[in-house]
Length: 562
Image 1 (tube, helix red, strand yellow):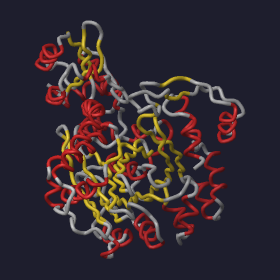
Image 2: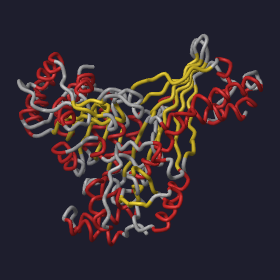
Image 3: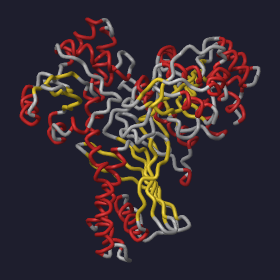
Image 4: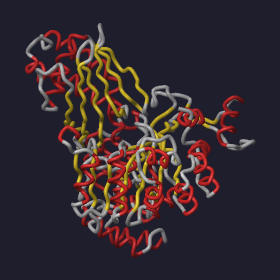
């Protein structure tokens, strides 16, 4: 059986990681929001996943395994069928001559252990792993589809063309088995490759499929143009869009079931020169949202954020370019403070994830529901916390500041390159300097950088030119830290990277910063004062992650010099 809340309380209190009052509050929130207690403890920053795993493993008297970023070879996964692994919520991750190493949420599940012995022909050595880690790890079974991908697509393309499903009867084509199989395979392969977006682009003589993986687009496969109309029709049927509309952009959503969970896909179809192009954004609804530590916030930055998120009013702004993970950070903040004791309302465009016990409204400028109008409506809805998808115009700035002044905590995003740049940006949009100084509590600037592939990481020495750039950006004359990179392997597609992590800088508006805002000084002066007060710059945070073997110096230079 899984560990009970009472036993979990005994374990973490005895270790001194969590106080009894904090634990009881987390347990109450978990029950009210119908969330796993472990998730609430992690989200509130009371304990991280690895420390919790170590404690529970000691209780079970088995080793702990962290599956984060662990690449499991296909020959290990093949020793236990995926259906059995998902049914018992277990995952094989390694072996020696006699034993199979098995990650388990419940190491005392003897039925599961006996099943694995029979199916693998090996003795079993149980390890404890958290439920969330096992859920993520199970997705590695989909690596099998890599070898079959092109074969499946080619076979079904031939069947589609042979059946004439590419003709004028688009309704029939959309439900034809080969067409369904082609799209399902594209989705399954995208999930196996951890893609965030699928691009289906029609050119003059071919249909190109591209995936965005770790922020970079990659060509995946070229298909014949004859099946384009059938693929588009299939997507339109799933998203309940007009099949016979080819001249106007259309947007929709649908869900794709996979391994007991669901992937939500946000679809955009536009009429391009040669025909309709499709982009599908993959949103993993069944996965637990990332905690702040998992996003890459740690140490001093994490502590500053924990303190400021407790404040009852003011503004917390997240800045960065498009695609830098700002909305993900906002969702993590909301998960951190969500409870039945506060009313949280959001106005978003679009709503990416449904969140329990949070009132979310979709902005729609065409009907007059702009961000500013949404805030105005939400203020009358008796909220404690308001999240605004983006501050982009004077009216939204005014409404956000007024909400912060009247006792609400306001979270939002802003497009600036760094944290100090948020202040002149707000002033440019018409905000009064004294209002900005009194309402902005915190500005978080962030970028997403690629993680080094854990399967092929190696130490290396950067060239003199690269070291010179690093010294210039960091202000250091000597560099004593180590540097790492990925050699490139099958698991990362030869790229040397697998996954992404954030690099951050956090500007806390203390008394000195407020005085500078009142004087309307430049962002450079604000940056100098913030650094003097202990702010960790984005480059410095990046270099810390380079020294820890999380990312490469090339990634840091690429992101901060964009």
